[in-house]
Amino acid sequence: MADFVSLWVYLSSSPLFGLTATLVVYLLAQAAYARSGHAPWANPVLWSVVVLAGTLLATRVPYPQYFSGAQFIHFLLGPAVVALAWPMWQRRAALRSRWGRLLLAALAGGVAASASAVAIGWALGLPRDALLSLAPKSVTAPVAMGIAQAIGGVPALAAVFAVLSGLVGALSGKYLFTLLKIQTDTQGWAARGFALGTAAHGIGAARALQVHPEAGAYAGLALGLQVLLASLLIPLVARLPG
Amino acid sequence: MEVLKGLAWLLVFQSVGEAVSRALGLPVPGPVIGMLLMFGGLFHPAVRQPVGACADALLAHLSLLFIPVGVGVMTHLALLEQWGLRILVVIVLSTWAGLGVTAWVLQALREPNDG
Image (cartoon, rainbow over all chains, first blue to last red):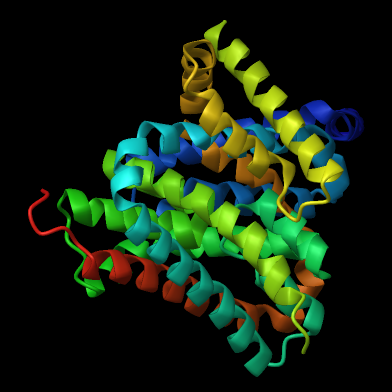
């Protein structure tokens, strides 16, 4: 038993642990997701986070120790944002002919999500730094952190809000779209995917990609546009007096 | 090899993006500027082939990349204990607003005869 404990202490303090645990848990969660027939509630990000955070809390491994290994995965978010140019480039013809309505939809959806988050949060009495961290909730976590930092929010909190928004979108999007009678033809899938990329960034895009290729491509496009719009507009609006 | 070359291109464009963002004091994060520059870069086949292969691999597992940040929720348990329910209400309602408005705008502007 003592041997096991010292082995655990050794393993859990090396960067190898965070990296291995993240990959293995994610692959298991992916397998379970596939077995469930890609049911929204079986979302692999949700269950990976629950299992990993639960394990760390139960074994009293502090988060920074886990992150020393997991950072190698986290680091890839930067190149992944650059890589979003690829789905956009592939759809450049559609983008050229539809840029007006897509830009309008991205702007309307982004403003709706951000403004309603800050307004509802304010009405419910959330503290100011939490409100500022809510503003960039629709964009992918690393960008949300950067924006929150720039406007006086808390980057770590912004990342949490972004991940939660992504999960809510991935989990409930399907039902909301059915309720709103969004079709399931080519244009309907494009609209669903675009909405997921706009309001639920990469986690929503991963879900869209899983459901339909057209939805996935438009989700990638929307996610890129949202990153651009949010990082230009949110710091500008935050600078307004009052 | 293609994927590795693609990753190198992505990192080069991200680095240039970071440099431009810092040098000009822009509010836009470096990777976003890198993404814009990459859109231009992709017109060149020497960039396009490796970057396309790498981007497909990277974006296919995009959800994996959010797990380290997501696990970070555990460091904010005190805040979530105090405000958890309200934060959940805010996140759920505002995400629905974003999804609904975006899909609705595209639905209202549908092209009549295109699949």
